Length: 422
Image (cartoon, rainbow, N blue to C red; front, side, top):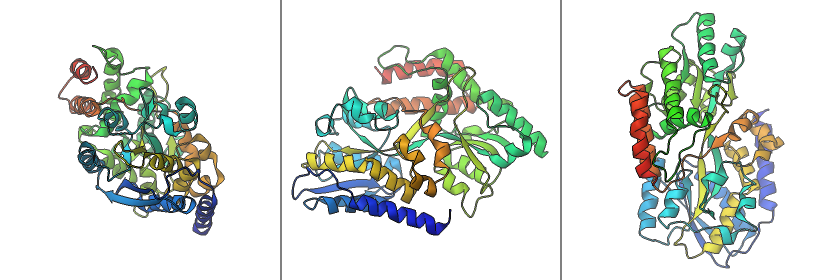
């Protein structure tokens, strides 16, 4: 599709949205202040606010933006909300935050602000959001745009080798060996993933763990299935020991994986969707040779991905809760999700948009992304999520650095998670 056609498609979507009626029960004269992180396309969010104001003349929406990273954004919001400051009515928060913020008393439950029951309301979104945004029966956030880890692979290398994308981790190793032999290049890395002690390493552990049917049980003295947890570590250790992944994988972070794949040094990568735009950019060595697939499984398991993305939430201290709840329902609507997909290449929060003609005209690869998004699961929803995350990521790093054996790491995790999740 030409750039002109893409621009016309985007303009058409904007025009349609701007003309659509928005349910208007916001208070007359309500002034809403919305916090959006600097990384979350505040320019596009402002356009959505403008659309809403046009359909709700009695409401004004002011954008506040800041925080170069999700950690800085979270720190700022924690300061504002812990002070019970009513200055912010709505905020865009990370998918791991709803349970934490709800436990702190910072979020307005949306149950009484929506039409119908919570279960029916959340069924309009991708399945994982019922777990991520509904805490103990309370709907506390609505999805803005989606994200999930997926398998990127080099279509040119796979075609040259005459093989299909792998569906199991064992097939990943086999594919890597076949490609290295066929290319006559033992230095090409078969698979890149994240084992540095960062949030991505939590997903690294959970993906094979979930694939086996594992869960992390809240309130249990043994929240982990130890057999599945050891197996999860061994999946990644096998990648290193077979030469599929590099020996110093414990030093690899998210953007390291992106750069390695982009420069053509990697055949496969487990990564978030933001990598796609980089892979098609002017500085990429893999333009036009990138495919997307569901994540491989353990033998006999099911493909599972790790949900990311951002959520709209209403502050418990807002003085305009009805107006704020109405606005975030618009911001989480099908129309707004389509706008963000076409204008910003943000993954939709609803399955049907992955087949929408305008969305696919702007982002043809979204068709490949839908099967991944439908397998996504939310990370543990816990008020003590940061402790859960720190526990898992540190053990992943230790095991992949060779500093701790899988069974010892799992034994330590068992106790630490039990205390965090009691």
